[in-house]
Amino acid sequence: LKSSGIDVDEALVEGIMGLFPNMATLNVLDFIEGFSLLCKGSYEEKVNLIFDVFDFQQRGEISFDELTIMLMCCARGLEYLSERKINRNNKDSDTIDDEKVAEMLRYDFGQTQGMESDISKEQYLGWVKEK
Image (cartoon, rainbow, N blue to C red; front, side, top):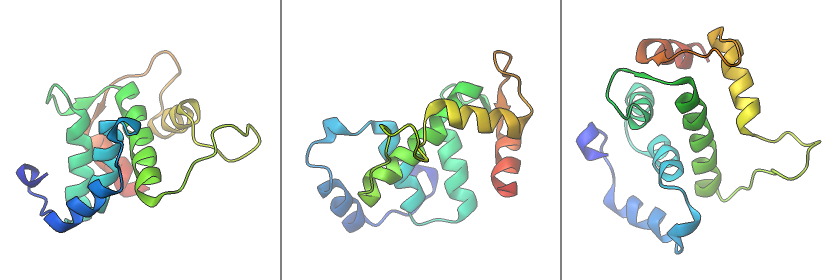
Protein backbone atom coordinates (compact mmCIF):
# COMPACT_ATOMS: atom_id res chain seq x y z
CA LEU A 1 0.00 0.00 0.00
CA LYS A 2 2.85 2.37 0.72
CA SER A 3 4.08 1.92 -2.86
CA SER A 4 0.70 3.28 -4.00
CA GLY A 5 1.24 6.47 -2.02
CA ILE A 6 -1.09 5.59 0.85
CA ASP A 7 0.38 6.16 4.29
CA VAL A 8 -0.23 3.11 6.48
CA ASP A 9 0.11 3.05 10.27
CA GLU A 10 2.14 -0.10 11.04
CA ALA A 11 0.54 -0.53 14.49
CA LEU A 12 -2.86 -0.45 12.81
CA VAL A 13 -1.76 -3.09 10.31
CA GLU A 14 -0.54 -5.36 13.12
CA GLY A 15 -3.80 -4.85 14.99
CA ILE A 16 -5.89 -5.68 11.95
CA MET A 17 -3.78 -8.74 11.14
CA GLY A 18 -4.42 -9.88 14.71
CA LEU A 19 -8.13 -9.97 13.89
CA PHE A 20 -7.46 -12.81 11.46
CA PRO A 21 -5.69 -15.64 13.27
CA ASN A 22 -6.75 -18.00 10.49
CA MET A 23 -6.06 -16.08 7.27
CA ALA A 24 -7.25 -19.09 5.25
CA THR A 25 -10.82 -17.92 5.94
CA LEU A 26 -10.26 -14.60 4.20
CA ASN A 27 -9.76 -14.08 0.47
CA VAL A 28 -6.71 -11.87 -0.12
CA LEU A 29 -8.60 -9.59 -2.51
CA ASP A 30 -11.42 -9.19 0.03
CA PHE A 31 -8.85 -8.17 2.62
CA ILE A 32 -7.01 -5.73 0.34
CA GLU A 33 -10.23 -4.06 -0.77
CA GLY A 34 -11.72 -3.77 2.72
CA PHE A 35 -8.43 -2.67 4.23
CA SER A 36 -7.79 -0.05 1.54
CA LEU A 37 -11.02 1.66 2.52
CA LEU A 38 -9.76 1.98 6.10
CA CYS A 39 -6.24 3.27 5.32
CA LYS A 40 -5.09 6.83 5.62
CA GLY A 41 -5.42 8.74 2.40
CA SER A 42 -7.90 10.87 0.55
CA TYR A 43 -11.10 9.48 -0.88
CA GLU A 44 -9.64 9.84 -4.39
CA GLU A 45 -6.49 7.91 -3.42
CA LYS A 46 -8.61 5.10 -2.00
CA VAL A 47 -10.92 4.71 -5.00
CA ASN A 48 -7.91 4.83 -7.35
CA LEU A 49 -6.15 2.14 -5.32
CA ILE A 50 -9.23 -0.09 -5.36
CA PHE A 51 -9.44 0.18 -9.16
CA ASP A 52 -5.70 -0.40 -9.59
CA VAL A 53 -5.88 -3.63 -7.55
CA PHE A 54 -8.28 -5.07 -10.15
CA ASP A 55 -6.61 -3.61 -13.23
CA PHE A 56 -4.45 -6.72 -13.47
CA GLN A 57 -3.09 -5.91 -16.93
CA GLN A 58 -2.63 -2.20 -16.12
CA ARG A 59 -4.68 -1.16 -19.16
CA GLY A 60 -6.63 1.59 -17.41
CA GLU A 61 -9.79 -0.49 -17.72
CA ILE A 62 -11.32 -3.56 -16.14
CA SER A 63 -13.90 -6.03 -17.36
CA PHE A 64 -17.48 -5.82 -16.18
CA ASP A 65 -16.97 -9.08 -14.27
CA GLU A 66 -13.87 -7.65 -12.54
CA LEU A 67 -15.89 -4.59 -11.51
CA THR A 68 -18.58 -6.84 -10.04
CA ILE A 69 -15.94 -8.87 -8.19
CA MET A 70 -14.31 -5.63 -6.99
CA LEU A 71 -17.50 -4.45 -5.33
CA MET A 72 -18.15 -7.88 -3.82
CA CYS A 73 -14.60 -7.93 -2.41
CA CYS A 74 -15.07 -4.49 -0.88
CA ALA A 75 -18.29 -5.61 0.78
CA ARG A 76 -16.79 -8.89 2.05
CA GLY A 77 -13.59 -7.19 3.22
CA LEU A 78 -15.55 -4.61 5.20
CA GLU A 79 -17.75 -7.41 6.52
CA TYR A 80 -14.70 -9.17 7.97
CA LEU A 81 -13.08 -6.01 9.26
CA SER A 82 -16.26 -4.80 10.95
CA GLU A 83 -17.03 -8.28 12.31
CA ARG A 84 -20.53 -8.06 10.81
CA LYS A 85 -21.87 -10.97 8.83
CA ILE A 86 -23.93 -10.51 5.69
CA ASN A 87 -26.87 -12.91 5.73
CA ARG A 88 -26.41 -14.98 2.58
CA ASN A 89 -28.85 -17.78 3.49
CA ASN A 90 -32.17 -15.96 3.90
CA LYS A 91 -33.62 -15.34 0.42
CA ASP A 92 -36.13 -12.80 1.85
CA SER A 93 -33.50 -10.64 3.55
CA ASP A 94 -31.59 -7.76 2.00
CA THR A 95 -28.54 -9.79 1.06
CA ILE A 96 -25.60 -8.93 -1.15
CA ASP A 97 -24.91 -11.40 -3.92
CA ASP A 98 -23.01 -11.33 -7.20
CA GLU A 99 -26.09 -11.16 -9.40
CA LYS A 100 -27.69 -8.29 -7.47
CA VAL A 101 -24.45 -6.33 -7.71
CA ALA A 102 -24.09 -7.13 -11.43
CA GLU A 103 -27.70 -6.07 -12.07
CA MET A 104 -27.11 -2.73 -10.33
CA LEU A 105 -23.89 -2.17 -12.30
CA ARG A 106 -25.57 -3.03 -15.61
CA TYR A 107 -28.21 -0.42 -14.87
CA ASP A 108 -25.69 2.24 -13.76
CA PHE A 109 -23.34 1.69 -16.71
CA GLY A 110 -26.06 1.12 -19.36
CA GLN A 111 -24.92 -2.44 -20.04
CA THR A 112 -26.98 -5.35 -21.38
CA GLN A 113 -26.65 -8.78 -19.78
CA GLY A 114 -24.37 -11.00 -21.85
CA MET A 115 -23.00 -8.02 -23.79
CA GLU A 116 -21.09 -6.19 -21.04
CA SER A 117 -18.08 -4.15 -22.11
CA ASP A 118 -14.95 -3.06 -20.25
CA ILE A 119 -15.13 -0.13 -17.84
CA SER A 120 -12.43 2.54 -18.10
CA LYS A 121 -10.88 4.09 -15.03
CA GLU A 122 -12.49 7.41 -16.02
CA GLN A 123 -15.94 5.77 -16.19
CA TYR A 124 -15.36 4.11 -12.81
CA LEU A 125 -14.17 7.35 -11.16
CA GLY A 126 -17.17 9.23 -12.61
CA TRP A 127 -19.50 6.54 -11.29
CA VAL A 128 -17.92 6.61 -7.83
CA LYS A 129 -18.14 10.41 -7.71
CA GLU A 130 -21.80 10.26 -8.73
CA LYS A 131 -22.65 7.73 -6.02
